[in-house]
Amino acid sequence: MRALTYLAAALLAAATPAWAGDATRGAALAEARNCAACHGANGISAVPLMPSLAGQQAEFLLVQIIMFREGLRPVPAMMEPARGLTDAEIEDLAAFYAALPSGPAATDPRNEALAARGAELSAARNCATCHRPDYSGQAQVPRINHQREDFLVHTLAEYRDNLRVGMDTQMNGVMHGMTNADIRAIAHYLAHR
Amino acid sequence: MTTKIIPALAGAALLLAPGLALAQGAPPPAWAQGRSPEMANSTLAPHAGRLTVTPPDQLPTAQLRVPEGFQVELWAHGLPGARVMVRGPNGTIFVGTRGIGRVYAVREEGGERRVSTFMQGLQQPSGLAIREGALYISAINRMLRVDNVEQNLSNPQPVDLTAAFNLPEAPHHGWTHIAFGPDGRLYLPRGVPCNICDTDGERYALIASFNPDGTDRRIEARGVRNSVGFDFHSRTGQLWFSNHGRDWAGNDNPSDTLHVNLRRGEHHGFPWCASGWQDPAVSGRLCSEFPPPALILGPHVAPIGTHFYTGTAFPERYRNALFIANRGSWNRERLAGYEVVVVREEEGGRLVQEPFLTGFRDDKNQRFRGRPAGVMTMPDGSLLVSDEQNGAIFRITYRR
Image 1: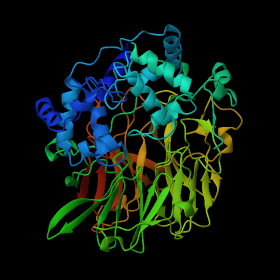
Image 2 (image 1 turned 180 degrees about the horizontal axis):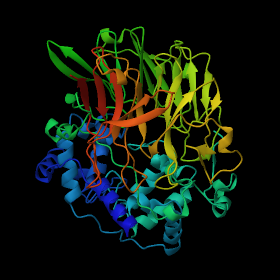
Image 3 (image 1 turned 180 degrees about the vertical axis):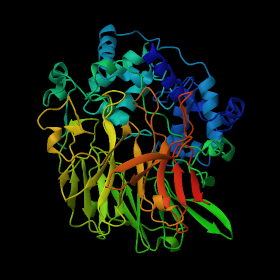
Image 4 (image 1 turned 90 degrees about the vertical axis):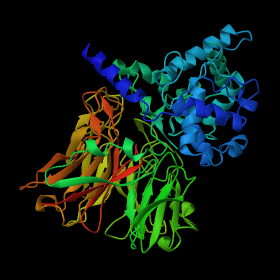
């Protein structure tokens, strides 16, 4: 019981955001920068390789947009939209997308064998420790359910190939040595939950 | 890279033994390697840093505590990720970071203190050192030198020394502290690219020194898991360094440590021994084979800035005392660290540590208000402490 109390307290400490953006201002800014053209009107992307942002963790969004602005994550399509954003504007954008309802899971047929392999890989690598058991993420750790399967494949390969680093280097370590088949399995599993 | 993963359990050995690792796909994430069975379902994860500006009214200035006679005040803010600090000969304070990739410059202009982003877009530029008016910047495997740096604040043209230093590219535990020793050489630790593993001991788990141009590499200390703070004793010139113990072995084991490197090339125990604790994940060598640490700092406290006070403004008992900024734990159910401690040498040579700057850790609610990272003496004898979480710098003075 004592241990449980400690655990709950530790989770609280980790989950308490140190800032608060304004989702209303964020909505206006998203409109002005035409984010919907790629990321979808409700933050749910219909464009190949473009991520859905609805219900994404605010702190994760914040970190990524800052990395675009600082040139630390060089995605050409994001260079112009992120240019000149202030910290406060980024907090607002993050708050806006975090507040949108995520989902749904992918609607194309689920390949049971592939999904089972993905589940196995996820368990072996403790993905749910940081991403949470339902894969909704926490703080700077992103939501990875309710995401486009093709984007998950793309992103996981980028981490594996050291083409992308996060705020820290954890995901590069996680993905080291994974095969393309492994990546397809994990992405299929996550997208169909 | 010849890194082998060391399994926590005999059962896991089959999964992770060299050669089988690839067949099984990727090794677990670096921080999860060597996880004990009782922590298998733990949900502890690294805390999120903050990369945006923290407004002054959200800073924990009023909650900070120092011993009687000392005062603490906010000195600078608006430097997200502020970590290490060095001072140029003309008084510019350079501040390194990790995740946000920036080096800041803080200077006084017309009686006003100004913060500017001096360089950006670097990968974890956490190591800064000053020599003959030049600023050295270490960013994982990159090494840059900006000559006459204070005359070139608005348009730095760095000399790229990356090839000469030939540092490992592995980013994990590759963020480093650097400093020039009394021998004029540049000292640079390199941590292990994992939580616990048997690495190439010529490349990782060490502190090396170089000529300022990157030539004549020498290994000064071995068996050092991850040191991100060190200094040279003001009188003896000896290298004193702090070291991070590994994760996922429990709440109270192993402890982070302080070491004195008594001879060149001395081995300090990693991966077999940490803080006098024999790591059950690794066999082969015993703790008794290695020199014990100079001081046990505490489990998971995460010592960063490790700095001998060189001023005279503080009372006698703080002269040449070692200040250590403990950035604070994540792999522990109760928060530990989140404070600056001072280590003093008592008569007979015994080292004792006591809290110096506290208030970042909120024990009651198990939250933290900030994470102290860098410590530096100013010419007037005051002490600067950076707060990485809030991107702020606090100044501590003494008045009788």
